[in-house]
Structure formats: structure tokens, C-alpha cells
Length: 294
Length: 219
Ligand SMILES: [Zn+2]
Image 1 (cartoon, rainbow over the protein chains, first blue to last red):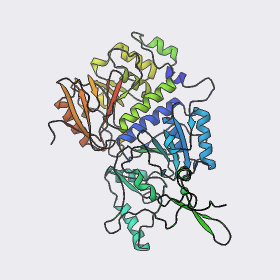
Image 2: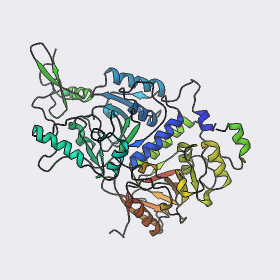
Image 3: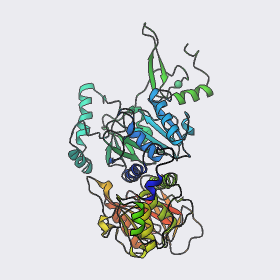
Image 4: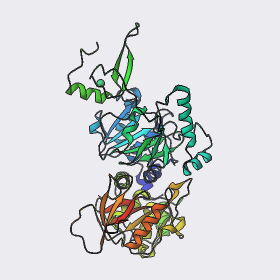
């Protein structure tokens, strides 16, 4: 046993951030290659996280691999810091890595996310870790890995455009609203994870480092800071993000991603920011649109 | 798998250098700086000062301690393959020494060697991630607007992912031959090797995506 292996098991009997050092080294080497080949899916092996798939095991493996004692971790699920999933993951890393946690986007050095990119613009030095269920945007079209690898290598992405164009033929517009495919650094087409297409433009030229982990398929990929990320579209049907006629009931935001909330049996509904931290910050700094909903 | 006792009797302990005192946290800290360097090519990152087996720099040694293990054969340029270096890396990382350049996952070379980057594993179109990572010992590294630069310091303009528009760096020891190697390597994308340049306890990365031009020789 090398000394590194021996030292990796601490006195408490578990590893820092749960993963053993050998698995971390393997994922770290994979992450460096992922950053060097933006948008390309790097396969990785290693130990499983103690959670069922669907709980963001891929994101947790990436977070466990990058996080250190000096980090401050934020975890969001559909934009919210207080869902069961987000709270569980935050507690897991607070317990196994002793890291500080926060709900403030601006305070976090590492943010693990499922289904959203924070509304507050990310800063240089921050790392955004996405939980990814299905990493390959070509998987729906071609189930064989050996085929999709060749398609990515040769940039044979015509089928992606055909799929989007079928939308236009059927609905008169591109109906894909989540996991809307992007092209990274003018080469690889990448699944941005099931974020709303509203968030796609935030990936482009971001000062933050974006890392993606898929647990079931064991793939990691990355977008370095200041990298071109374009949503696929057509000249006559340019990419567009969702817009709302309504504004947030709590903070009055008109520029944020809004969730519809049914308020009573008579079909009453309100709209609220999906990003809870963003909404809370705005409530502190801007007067309320009206009386807060009781 | 060998035990520690077997390893100690099997290798001569000539020049054996200490590994990380706290491997979990030091490896994480070194990795984060390498990750930041790879994510923003041309930025200079400092590691904690530390001992290294001669003639390796502290940065090169710490990167090896953080990233190498029995799954990553290492190729060493003969000038760097001292007993102290070989023994220390075998003992602490358990890595094998590759005897062929194209079998190495990592390589340690010096900027003044005439090592061709094309001789290393370039990865394949289907699996470009399988290419080698090459650690290059250089005589000096400066981020943008480094002042006291000598005549032989090449000033480079870098462009590509991780760089907002352009970044200027000075790399002591990168001559016209290196510029050609970088250009050839970049042209292989998505294949090609990734470079980590080291000097003292500093490091900078030049992944395959980075386009480098010598100032005064643009276009
Ligand atoms: Zn709001």
C-alpha cells in the first residue's frame, strides 16, 4: 500500500467528503481532461455514493472531488435551498467534509445544482456543479454509445436539428423547453442538464467554471469560464427564452424564472421566483409589489 | 499490490523525499489550483512551498503527488530521472515508470529538451480524454505585465476557452520550436496533449484548446 492510500483513511473511519482518495484522483484526472475538451463527456469509474440514483449522485461525486476545507457550499434543487434533496446534500457535506454551507449565491465557492442556474450572476472563481440524469443529448436518437461517440467526434449533429425541426413542423415553434441542447466552443453538442432553456444564455461566456456529473452513466463534462455556449437554432426560428406577462408575487421580479403556484380551489394562481435566494435578496432591497400573499 | 514493507525493501531509498504530510487535504488543494489553471489558461498559480527530489521543482513534484497512482504510468525525460525522483514517486504514488512515450498517462519533461509532443499518447477521436498530460519544467513564468523580464523570455498571446478575449504571458524557455509544437498540438483538437508548466512552486496550464502566438510574430 502506498503512503497516500494509507493516509487517506482518517481516524474516524470514513473519508473526507465520503469518497476514497483513489476514486477522487481518478475523477480529478477526468475533470482536468473534461475542462481541456469543453463539452466532451469523459467516462469515469470509482466508488458509488451512498444514495440511490436520481438523488444527484453524479453531482455529489464531482462536489466530493473538488471540495476542500476552505470552501463554502450552496446546494439548490429547482432553484430552492430548502427542499429535502438540497438540505440532505448540504448536510451530507457539512458532516463528511466539515465545510461551511450557505444559501447566498454570492457567498458560495461551490454550488451544486439540480435544474437551475442561479439568477444572481456567478463570479470568477466560483464552481457550479450540475446534477445530470442523461448526459448524452444524442441518446434519445441513438442508444448505442459506440455510435454516439463517433457522431460527436465527426460533429454529425444533423439529427439534433431534425429533432428540433420536427417540433417546429408540429407546433409552429421549438417546443423543447428543458435540457435544450447547446454547442460548446463550436464543437461538441452538450446536454445542459434539465435546466429550463431560460438559463441557457447564462452558460455562455460565464466567469464561473461549470462542471457536470452523471452518476448512473458515469460521465463528467465541463465548460471552462469565458467559453462560447450556443443554443442550437435555425435562421428562421432563432433561439428564444421563456417570458412571463406576470411578475413575482413576493419581490416583483419580471426578469427571473417564475413558478406558477395554485392558491385555491377556484383556480387562483400566483407566480413566484423559482430562485429562493434571489427572491429573498430582492425582498430585502426592493419594496414589495403589494401585500405579501397570506 | 505491494505492501509498504515490500516497497521499502524493493527500492533503494536514495534521496527519498517526503510526500504530503496531510495527503487528503494537500492533494485537494493542489488539484484545485491545477483545475483553476486548466480552466483559465495562462494564469499563474502558486502552491505551498515544499521539498522536492532534485532536480524536480516543488510544483511538479506536488502535482505528481496529487494526481499520480498505480493507474498512471509516468514517462520521465532522462535528465529528470534521478534516483531521488524515481524512488520518491514510486514510493509515494505507486506509479509505474513508462519506458515508451506513447504508453505514459503523464510525462515530466524540461523546456530545453527536444521532446516532441506528438510522440505522446494523443487520445483518439472517440476518446480524446485518453491523451497524456505533459508537465514541462520551465525557467520562468509570468502572468500579464511581468516586469523584470530578460531578453530571452518569450511573450505570448493566448486565446481560447477560459480566456476572456486575450491573455499575455511570459514563459522563460519557450522558443520558436515550442511555438510550433503548441500550434501542431492545438491543430489536433479534439485530440492532443495538455501541458502544465512548472517553475519553483508556480504552475500554469496550456490545454490543447489554447492558441498561442509569439508577440511580434502574429499572423
Ligand atoms: Zn421573487
